Length: 206
Image 1 (cartoon, rainbow, N blue to C red):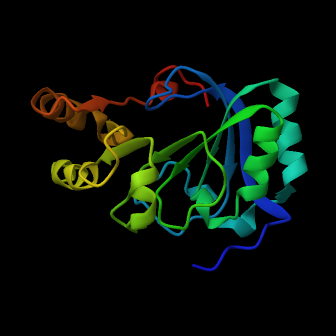
Image 2: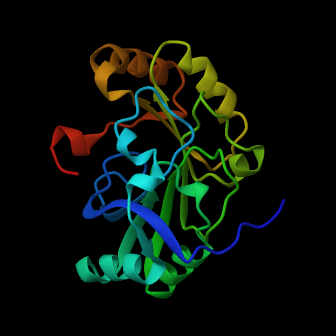
């Protein structure tokens, strides 16, 4: 594998201080850095504006770190997208960790892993499969359930992650009323899984 070059600047769609609304760290304060650019193309994506990186200004690593430090002295910084691994993230995560922050990533795993991470949330998508190399590194496997066939698909990936990886099933937001009861029944029969809800949408915060 050829190493990606260090990027002097990264297309930044938005950044904000809120709480983590999903998965293992749900409810904890976190600063979100949403990078632009995505080639996965989920039909139900709720941030399609992030797909085209040319629509968003580029920011330097120093500028991004300064945004975070302006809001908090320590804690979790979540790098998300789009698909953040379309960018080389070694420098960004190094500077964030040097400043005392924990670095978390939310990724489909469809691109090579760069960066140094305290937590890797892998959310694979059918539209572009994750690279096999990232599966054993995931701390958290989060499957967005869009229809009934996704349960079998989720089980296939659960068999490929490490034994300590946390397993989450999350209803696709627009179908939550129909999908959530199906997830509950599935988790009752398969208790290694946990329900993830997008609580930030329920309480209407970013």
